[in-house]
Length: 146
Image (cartoon, rainbow, N blue to C red; front, side, top):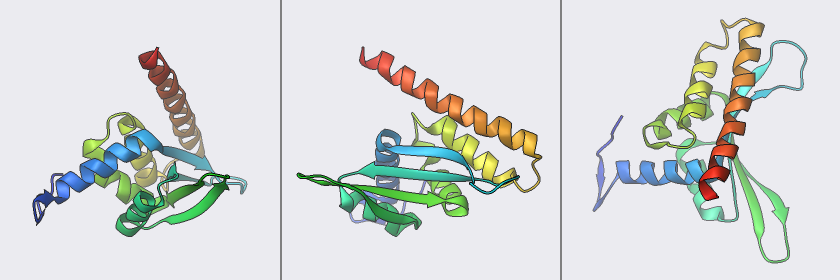
């Protein structure tokens, strides 16, 4: 999915690639088990950062919400988050350019698209797989830095 709508010298593709890179480094994708009992799971994507301007761009483009997560003496830390269908739409747009979070995004998209017909057992399997992917990325990133 490569969009080439020109906006001056910049293309939409350039902007999407930048946002995907930012999300790859600072974002998180999860399958979240709701606090309700039973068969209730949904996807969530979020970005935590002190740069409110970039988070406002995410919100403008994709929807979602921004909240103040932490206020320190020197700066504020904000959290942008988006859930369910909006999160799925965002991940689909960013997917072409994702590297670190590509597999997590694909899993979240599949989960969202098929969760209504999915048995609880399969939801639990996908939930567990997402947790494993997140852990493996943490270890891979640490080993690259060493």
